[in-house]
Image 1 (cartoon, helix red, strand yellow):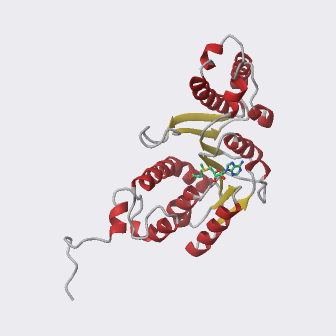
Image 2 (cartoon, rainbow, N blue to C red; image 1 turned 90 degrees about the vertical axis):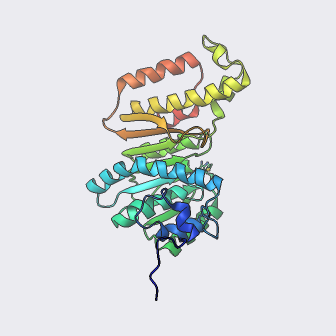
Image 3 (cartoon, protein in one colour; image 1 turned 45 degrees about the vertical axis):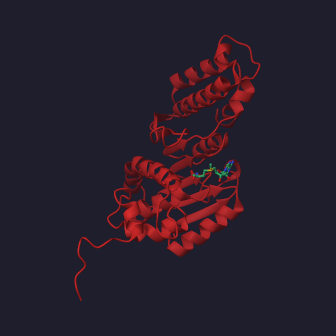
Length: 281
Ligand SMILES: C[S@@+](CC[C@H](N)C(=O)[O-])C[C@H]1O[C@@H](n2cnc3c(N)ncnc32)[C@H](O)[C@@H]1O
C-alpha cells in the first residue's frame, strides 16, 4: 500500500478550517460544525459562516484565559449562554475548552423552544453530557443551584442584554461577556425629549445610534457600580459585523460608589430612565 504523500489533496472540510480552528485536530470538530450548519454538508465554509465563525472564535480566545482561571478555582464552573439561539458559542466553548478539560457545564437559555430542542439533540449526539438547555425568557430563567460563574450573551436582542445583566447579578457571575445587539428602547425614550443634550438625539438616525451607544455606556456603569472591572473592545473588525462591541466584566469588589455617582449623573443629564436601572439598581 503506497504511503499518502503531502501532495495528495486533503478533504475539503479540513481545508476550510485550516488556520482558523484552534485545535490540534480540526477534523474532529467537522461533524459538530456541519450539524451547526457552519460547514456545508460537503464541508465547505461559505462567507457568512466564516464571518460568524471568526467572531465566535475570537470571543472564545478572549474567554479562554478567564475560563481556565474558573476551571482552576472551581471544580465545575457553570457558563450560562443567554439568548443562545443555535448555541454556536456554547457548543464551540464546550468543544474547544470544557470538553478537553473534562469539567465545567454550559447552560443555554433561549425562548424559542424549537431551537432548544435541536440543541438538546445535538448535545446528545455529540456526547456533550455537560450541556443543558432551558426554554425560557432570560428574565424568568432560574437555574438549579442558583450559581453561575460566567454569563455570555452574544447579540441578545434589544433589552435581552439588560436581562442578561440582571441574570448575571442574580446568579453571582464572576465574569460577564456581552456583545449587545440592536437597541431600540433608548431611542424611543429620547424621542421628543428636551434637555441640555437634546442636539445629540434630534435626528432619528443619530437618535438610534446615540441611543445604542449611551445604553452600552449605562450598562458598563451599572456593572462597575456592582463591583465589576469593565473592558470594552472590538469583537472583530468592522468589516465582520456592525454589532461588534464586546463588554467584558470581571467581578473584583462589592461595589463602586464612584461609578454609581457617574451613572446617576448621566441618567440625570439624559432625563430618561431605561428599564435596566429598575432591574438592577
Ligand atoms: C440574534 S440571535 C443570537 C443568537 C446567538 N447568541 C448567536 O450569537 O448566534 C438572538 C437570540 O436571542 C433570543 N432571545 C431574544 N430575547 C430573548 C430573551 N429575552 N430571553 C431568551 N432568549 C431571547 C432570540 O430568540 C434569538 O434566538
